[in-house]
Amino acid sequence: MEKLYLGIDGGGTKTLAVLVDNKGNLIDFKKTGPTNIMECGKKKFLKNLNEISVILKKIDKDTVKSCFGMSAIGEYRGLEYRLKKLIQSQLGIIPNLLVNDVVIAWAGGSLGRDGVHAVCGTGSIIYGKHKEKDVRVGGWGPLIGDEGSGFYIGIETLREVTKQLDGRAPKTFLTELIFKEMKFESKYDLLEWIKNLGKNFRHEIASISYLTSKASSVGDNSSKFILEKAAKELSLSVLSAIRLLKFDPNPVITYSGGIIENIPVFYKYFFNYIRQKIPTADIRAVKFWPVFGALILLKEEVDANFLQNLKNSEETIKKELKKGE
Image (cartoon, rainbow, N blue to C red; front, side, top):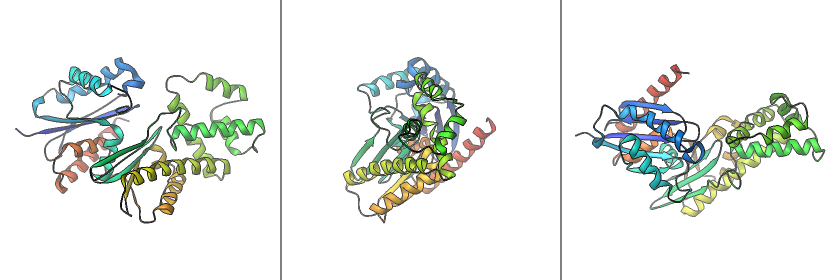
């Protein structure tokens, strides 16, 4: 009986499940809410996971090979065992692969070949593989990590704003923009906003990075400095992974995430800093969404036809998701 392949990209804001046949042709897909159990909690995790079960209802589950790329894997003792049990209870399958979502992002960028991948969105993390060795750099969370991420940029921006309000740094357009866009009338409004941050504080603070980018685009030097500093921090993490893996002179570096993809000046700083250190580095955007990286990891032999069918599947899903917006 022909094998079917199920890929899951489970993150802190949304989850995407894709089911394809042995040739990579799309059978079905489902988009649902977050499945980072450490952030959304067990109840919401089970609810969102259960919504995925609809794409498995009319098939023989014994034919399904699955790869789950999920936030928080490898960060908490015993979490993998716990998640496998919960997945089995909701979907009736045991994952063939259960990895951190950065691993499937890497596979979507490098097609499962040697390389280093940088995720830079709300948080940041680096994953790389060379020959038989793999490493993870970063991923230490918002309190002591997330270097170069949207959260990092948001925190650095708020710090700069408080310096400007205190007179410890000259006032620039950045503070004016933050106050205008966030409807602050005084420093007390800023203090109240900070005190009222809830469980989603990472996402709320990371959203400020959009304003940092906006200020930078009109020439605000304090914003440019923050973005340059953030890009350098991310670059240092990538360079660390390359060094640990003992790569040859021209490593492949791929990237994904809202910050590095949507803030051109951030990418420019990142690209230039890497190239200063490794002039022959091959820096490129990912070829596939992370969920398709999960499917690539499952396939023992990945040929051009399989990849083309995955690309067609991705385009179909993009169109369907756009209809629902």
